[in-house]
Every structure is written in structure tokens, then in C-alpha cells.
Amino acid sequence: MAATMKGTVAVEDVNVTFEDQQKINKFARNTSRMTELKNEIEAKKKSLQNLQDAGDDLMMLDDDTLLIPYQIGDVFVSHTQDETQEMLEAAKETLEQEVKVLEERVSAIQQVLSDLKVQLYAKFGNNINLEADES
Image 1: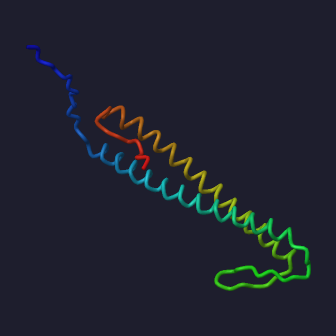
Image 2 (image 1 turned 90 degrees about the vertical axis):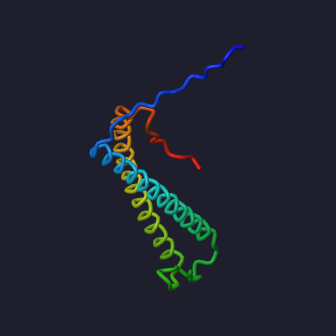
Image 3 (image 1 turned 120 degrees about the vertical axis):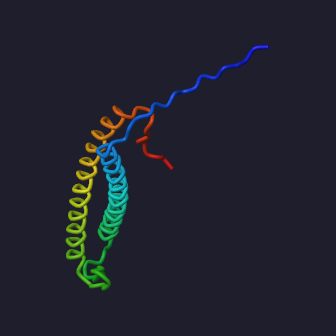
């Protein structure tokens, strides 16, 4: 009768110092912030697409004398087609700049996370999981 031996993976006992815990906490905070920023970028891109669609619809209008309602806050203000088109373009430019700034912040956070991953994996190896859950 043959006994089957399963290979066991030895888990090393790695001492977690205060500095290590600070790095882990910084990693968690930055990961959370990056997720928030990515969600904000997606929302702004959706708004940008809505503005683009509104601009396209506005160009298809035949009547130049028609006043177009444009929402400012909670109020709709009527403007000429040209004024509305200018307002849409200004709003698109503003949103594009905001998206660019947010993407730069995400890139900076990704660099910090990359550096922290290298440091933490160097010390803890397979004993730590720093990969995001794709759920």
C-alpha cells in the first residue's frame, strides 16, 4: 500500500514592522483613491459624450432663429443656436481638462503603487497579495 504525500507550501514567518504596516496602509489608501478617480473619469467621459451628442444634434437643426434651452445649474436658459454651441464647446473643453488632470493623478498613483509593490513583494514574497480583485 503506497501512501500519497502532498507537497506542502511552507509559509515563512515574516516579521511585520511598523514601517511595513505603513507601506501596506499607504498601498490600500492609494488603491482606493485610484478606484475613485477611475470612476470619476468614467463619469466625466460619459458627460463629455453627452455634450458631444448634444452638439451634434444642435448642428442638425435647420432653424437658426430657434432658441435652445441650456441648463445652467437647476435652471434652463434659452440661447441662440450659436451661443448654445459656444457654451457646449466651452463645457467640453473644461471636462476634457478635468479628465486630463484626473488621468495624470491616476498615473502618479500607479507609479506609487508600483514602487510599493516592489518593496512589499521583496520583503513578503507570496505571503502578501497586492493584486486588485477583478469583480
